[in-house]
Amino acid sequence: MSEDLAAAAEERHGIMVGVDGGQPSIRALEWAAARTGRFGPVRPVHAWDYPLAVWAPSPFGPGAAPPFEEMEAAARDAASACLDTLEGVPHEEPAVFHGDAGPVLVEAARDAELLVVGTRGRGPVRSNVIGSVGRYCADHSPVPLVIVPCHETPVPSTPCERIVVGVDGSDHSMNALTWAVATAEDDAEIIAISSWQTPIDGPILYGVNRFDIRALKAAARATVNETADKVCAALGVEPSRVGREIAEGDPRWVLMSRSESADLLVLGQRGRTGLPHFFLGSTTTALIHRPHCPTAVIPG
Image (tube, rainbow, N blue to C red):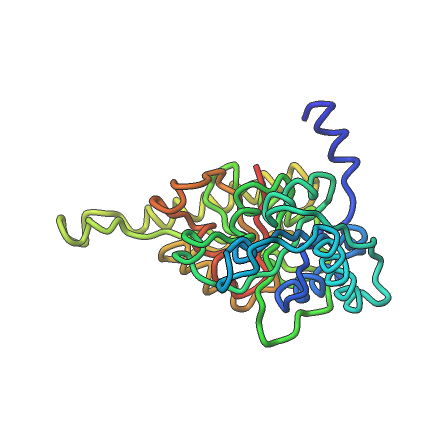
């Protein structure tokens, strides 16, 4: 790590949380409030912008935007109203910025330990067409991002007890496991999971015996063991600190299933942005759209 990067990392503090007064952002605040002991105080950020309707002529709209000062004051009031959730929790006063929420949060989070946003779980198609704050942050955040789903059940007020990490042998997944081990509570259970599956054209074109199932399973097990051993060695912890599992199936469905019983799912950020996500797809992209539990995306 360069001296500049090391200095920037040392200056990071707190949990940046995107707030807008809605229930998803309240859930994000609740999740962050339980983790100030690990990451520092909660730092609420509210981004506001003029809706397109304000520029529409009458009778479709007012034809002119409200005064900037009034919009700014309304945004500040909305951000302050969220602080009731943080009673007794270390936090800073909310910061309010004019601009698109995604870029605002990414820029504001550069000196934070963690960026946290809530999600309504609109699904991949609507998110690609309409745009999504969580999706933008997952692509561009310079710090670990946690996406908190807006479920009916309350957000646990205790630290994460079971953490599931997707591992595929890449540097991205090693970053994810490193972050999970380094930031987890000492008594938290950390499970690294790698999946394997028979290539789809094997049984159709060549018969089920063309591929050695045992070799595929062995490769998956070697992947998860090598990644976990390297991370534990680098952090100076016992190899038993990380549990290892393999499962047959598409990694998206394997991790989605495992996340139903987890307190946190941790994934690596692939670094693909824009159209490649839409056309190529990715495990991380699929899992952040409809998360079953809080999902962390760790940048490279």
